Image 1 (spheres, rainbow, N blue to C red):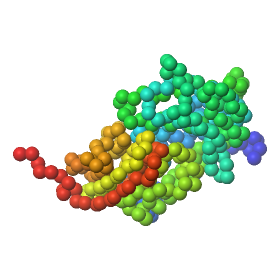
Image 2 (image 1 turned 90 degrees about the horizontal axis):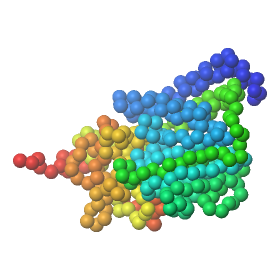
Image 3 (image 1 turned 180 degrees about the horizontal axis):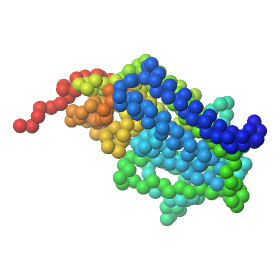
Image 4 (image 1 turned 135 degrees about the vertical axis):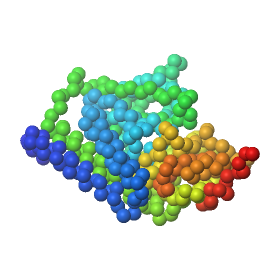
Length: 367
């Protein structure tokens, strides 16, 4: 497609019309027959499309110049996608294997930190390099520096490949109120001195890329949720290729599921978790958005969990707190999705499920 075509679309406004048409068509994803049709699920579904659009526009128009990389913190508390974790701070930026970069900052105290580069391969975003926080060389004052390049270098080195286009930084918390996230900065060390002005070609491409991201993610995660419905109130492992295509952390085991709990019921999941670095369990809505962790207890992790005498953990999913186990609030929903993450597990977890009446879990009221 020639630059003149892009110029014509931008000058005429057609580029924006095409973008809006694609957004409009994505609304049908929320109306799929298998999707829940309650007021809250329909309202959150439409809000979800707006949130996806915000993320997509940030990614495609504001964070795609590999010569002047800037970290995007998404998803976050009000822009969610793909079973985002309440315990993870996500950072990403565009890069290219044709350049070299310098990362620097302070390590902080977050327990889990990882850096990875990715690039397109066989239709998915494949890993092109990784550096684990456990292997990061940190100075005595807590600072660090990482070189990104195709050729190895001494010290902290994050490999690039010819097809590298994306840098991801994951930070996993166990207690956000006490732990300090890593402060991470990036610069291109062999690029131009100043960025180019925005062009019609760049704008036209960005709108198309944003629409593609938004519509494809909405469809993919709706497909995931539909597949989970076949085995309600259980957790299951996704195909490894699906996770790889989604850019999931290769060090982490993911068990997804669909929960459905009436107002007078509770879903109890008794988990015997293996020796592992970290684990967390969370509730999401049907659209694979984490429920609102700012105001509701919708997640439990290795540090915050209450353990039984035998070391087991019981998750209790219900509309109100029965005072038993590790309570997760359904936050006005009657169904949704859920996710158990386990980092570097020694073996799979053992899980047992029971759907019970909520009243049977509540003790007598104090006199």
